[in-house]
Amino acid sequence: MSFNRLIPEDFVVSSDSITATLWSEGLVTLTNFFTSSVQEAGSSGNFYLNIYQTSSTNASAAVQFAVAYGNQYGSGSSFYNNAVIGSSPTLTTYGQYQVLVLGDENANFTFGGVTSSDFWAISVDRTRYKESLFPGSLSLVLSGNTGNITLTDDSQVAPSVVFNEAGRVFQLVSGSQGTVNLTNPNGYSVASGSYGWLLPDIGTIILNQTALSASIGLASNPTYNSDGLNNRAMFNAISGGGSFFLNSQETISSDYIFIRARNAEFNYSENPSFISGSTGEVIWNSFINNPQTFPTTIGLYNDTNELLAVAKLSRPLLKDFTKEALVRIKLDFWSRWALTSNF
Image (cartoon, rainbow, N blue to C red; front, side, top):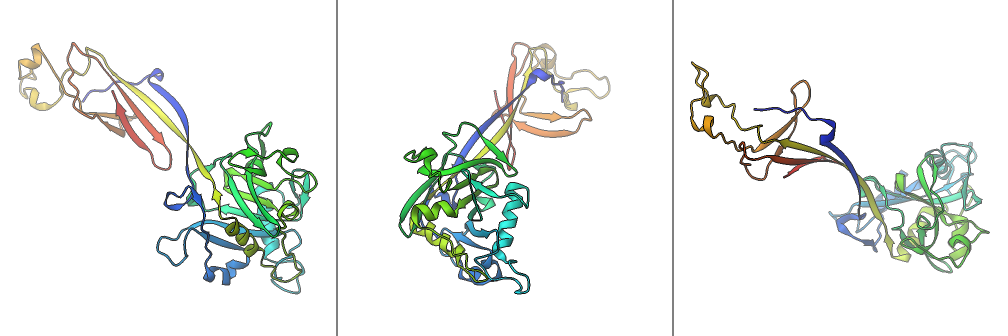
């Protein structure tokens, strides 16, 4: 076994962005939407509804995303305790997203300059995407009482990227897959604000109830101390629209390590069978006059001689004093890391 110490010039780091379909079974566009009657009737149904790509009783059923409704005053759902006015699932939902997205329990949701006291939230299931949602890929059709609307984000036309506690923030506008409908200023009505936010770094879409009500008649039912079925209303709007297209995005960091075997290196074997145990001489004359080796494996060690990674060559490599070799090892870091070698 022979060793060579690597120098800084032997290392190169690169990053590549990879996009992929978001939904289960490789579906590019989600067109069928199902809920679970058990979940909806249970205690969690007061807070959110899980949406599946097929009947929830099917073996292949998997949660694709969840919808929830939040109200600043706790309206639209029954109180936990009638003695505590306003404390309800919708208030809890509002507060959770308030802290998650805004980072301040006293901050307000302001969509395109218009503050709203309630919203719908679409949270993509964490197993559906690896790192984030892909800005510019969104195309969500919503059906309301007065028509349909297709929403996308303004990442392709926004002059700069806005950040908040949840990471990047893009306004939801009328359009499809990053192509913005600019018939209204900025792709939405200034009077009612944008249609919400795309928060790609936490896999969440926040929908502005005020804008949707003004545009397609999709209004919430903030009945005081009563279940307004607002989670079901958003599910009906999505299933009625019948089309939800969205991609995931992942940045893969790759480390390239270049292993150089110069002509005078790695030409002898350290296998004990080649050395006389009594005299320490090389047994085989061919190893003296014309040594040849056939490297098959490269190991990466740290300074304490601990083996960290192994790269296997695709075929044994003939090495002697007349030949030099350059092997490139690639380490990809994502949900699982892989090691490959090229020469």
